[in-house]
Length: 262
Image 1 (cartoon, rainbow, N blue to C red):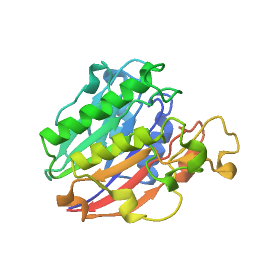
Image 2 (cartoon, rainbow, N blue to C red):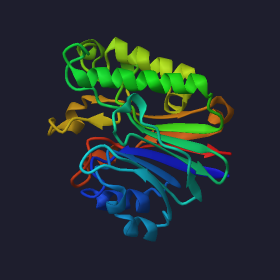
Image 3 (cartoon, rainbow, N blue to C red):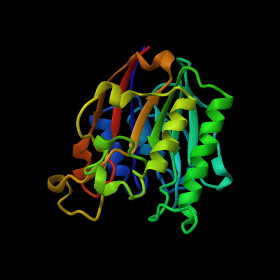
Image 4 (cartoon, one colour):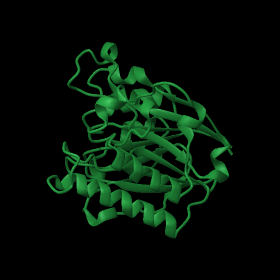
């Protein structure tokens, strides 16, 4: 069975229903994971998505904040949702596909603007969230699983437009990069995107503040696709749909894709 998966921080699924539908129609991933849906589950606009073949959905939602959802053409059942760090936020949902693969969809806290938990509570929450992810994967080693989402960290030097300038900027600080590496190591997760695209600058996010985002190209790779070692070798075809950042009323993130032959 071959299937293509995409992950996308949509920054309001209701506000951007039309470009979600455009992605579904034009690119037709079998599984689409969305973050920052900013909607209660019952108000997620499913009708148009179902008409495009996405008849299965698992989700956790909140009014105007956070929220994660997985839409699938492949039969899927919910496989859990965790509230790491007890934040009371809708930041994780898991779905199990009929082929036995579990897909974890995460929206890791952004962490605010100051990389110091003593003066910035949000940064502390981010580090606590990552620590609990790490501990959970140590305790229960994942198998036949894919982890995707807006992890809000660009770990490699070539995942940001300027490594030195961003070393003290939240999303690329050494403490965050180390915390993410510990999560990855705990689950023995393989970075599918960078396995497929090992070299060169690669971004999935460009700030709304930059009107000339495409020309300036000051991006970061905040969105990730990982897989457990037992299925990572089946992954290929990774790509970032950069053009989506320029669609009408876009998200500041672009979708990231990978295909798995299982």
